[in-house]
Image 1: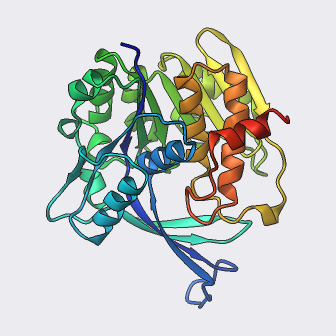
Image 2: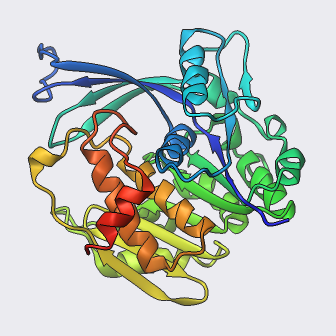
Length: 334
C-alpha cells in the first residue's frame, strides 16, 4: 500500500492577536486597533495550511489541550476543516496553551505565551504504531524548544522528542522537524539529540545558527551567507536527508545527496505585510507537501516562498494561505 498523508504533531495554541500602531515605552498606553482569535502553534498552523491547499491529503492532529473554552476552540477549528481530533489529548486540570500576540503592521510581533497542556505532551500520547498502520507518510513535529516534556533533557542527555522521532522512523514514516527561535543558552544541547532521528529539518536562519553554533547575521543585521551554508553543513552531520533554512532574504536547501540550492525571495512592499505571524509555518507546510509529492527542491522552495508571502497578507497565522492551485498558477508565472 502506498503511503499518503501528513501527521501534524506538537504545539496547539490559541492566538489572541492584537494590532497596535507602534510598540509603547514601559508604562505608556497604546491604543489597539484590532483583535483576532485564531488557532496557532507549529502543528496547528501546518495542519491548517495543508487543509487550505485543498488537495485532499489525509491529515492527523496530535497534541495536548485543556478542557476549557480554548480547548473547544481548537477542536471546533479541526472539525471545520475536516481533521479528526481522536489524538488530541485533553489534560484535565490544565489550560490549553495560549498567547497574546502584539502585532505592529509592517514591523514585528511579540508573543506573551502560556504553555499549559502543551508542556505536558509526551511520548506516550502518540500512538505511533496505529498511525503507521493507517499508512501515513510524513510525521511533522513542531516546535522543538516549545514542547515542554518532550524537550526536557534527561541525565544521559537524551530527550523525549528524540525517542519519539526514533520510534516514528522505525515505524517507516518520514520525520520532519521545526523549531522555535528561543534564546535559551542550552538551545544546541536540547535540540541536538533529536537531529539524528530527523529526515528533514525546516527552520529559520536564527534557529539554524543557534542549533549549529554559528553567527548567521552581522552586527548590522545583514545575513552572513557563508555562515548560513556552514550551519546547514554542520546540521547535516546529524540530519538524515536535508536541512531547509528560510530567511527574509531567501531559502537554502542543503541535502545529503546533492549540492546546496539557494532561492532568493522577492522584496515586498511594507504595506503588503498585515501580520508576520505564521509565515514560517506556511513555508513549512508547502515544503512538507513538496516532500510528500517528491517535487524537485527548487520547485518546492519557490512554492514555499509564495505560501509565506500569501500568509503575510493575512491577519492571523493561517487566514492568508490560498489553495495549492492558486500557488501553482503563481509559480508558473515565475
